[in-house]
Image (cartoon, rainbow, N blue to C red; front, top):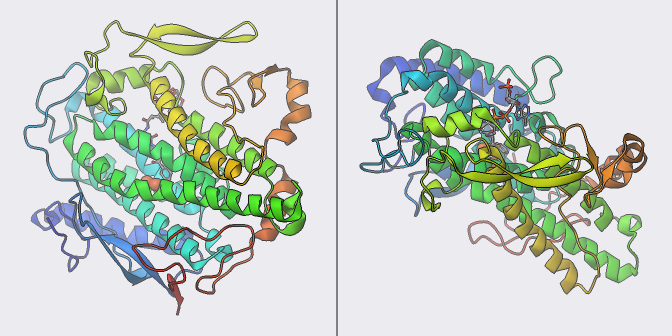
Length: 471
Ligand code: BYC
Ligand code: FE
Ligand code: FE
């Protein structure tokens, strides 16, 4: 199905058939555009950016690439095609036809899930809004804006569900999405990682590697939902998500590649003097971003998650491919617990451990990219390994909240932790150093000194293509 861009709100949901809904969304649209002007990417109003826009929702050929003037970007409402005769794959309603409307008894839970998901999308745009001023290349600047406009569209996806299915309180929640702000002391975003700063491009690449990957796992779980409009929204969002994580993995990989070059050229680990980012500092950034993202999965044992599952609202990652009864009445799952000074994995009801299971899937997936980063280092003949820190390191949610761990998994006293934390997490000085490298490079094909050039361009364009034009 192709999407009609002559409409005020491009969509594939027959919006024009429902005048009331359309008018309400058009009203929200002007609030959204006001928010984008105020809290979207700085200094982007005059730029022409080589962006991809969705022109359909089929797996093949859904995207169109062209230069778009940033304020003219068209955010739309796109659901993946309806799957005929789809049934609920898990929980108490397993085997029943999926819901095309909100089941009354689960209204509050469903709204909460959609609001939590929706809240993260504009948060990330707010967190990244300053980065355009210090882009390492036009290629990267374009990728930043691509990610930003798509996160804006993900907000649209959730706001559509709130407007179309939740009546007045849905509309209120949609307004509140533009009233909470990342890092706002009075009205913060819902999840803590979305209130942190993203002050530099290494943070941005870590964000898109680790935090967008939480997006992948949460969206995949919501794509299993028995509430079909949510499932279809998330399925289409996932097609966009892959690029965000590519930006993260390749971005960090290019920083590492450049660091290794500088290390070899100058025969030193201390590449800061040569305008590079040392591997030790890259490790600190990994420690920070990974640990705050582990918190995004919630507590190891969660009755909320059990309720979502049993109700058929939120499944597990690739639910239908899991070989079990999909009801989990008395199935076990191992969760970490503190036994004295040690972490022990003990059986808990799998139903209560849904969050933990998803976190495990995420941890394994995160490791795969780290392995590829380590290959870059190894191929450069350098004997250093980057690692993901221990699951208990720097945690603020769940079992480990009141404990301190070193990245290699030793339980620490408060004093030990305070003594060492600056070796493990980026310090103000570290951030200040990285900030000195953040000088914009805007000549086509040129790349900042601290990062290697991309391996290839976007959509088969050369790497020295003018991805962004300054009007
Ligand atoms: N921060 O039962 P529990 C993305 C609260 S990223 C603060 O363990 P539950 C994106 C919780 O609310 C994907 N508070 O957790 C990426 C609860 O409060 P109450 C975002 C937290 O309820 C990059 C209490 O602690 N999508 O798309 O199962 C760029 C006990 O919690 C946190 C989703 O998250 C936290 N981290 O929640 C752009 C999917 N964690 O009830 C976009 C929707 C928990 O005691 N959300 N709490 O007052 C969910 O599925 C679930 O709500 C959570 C876990 C995964 C967040
Ligand atoms: Fe998103
Ligand atoms: Fe994303």
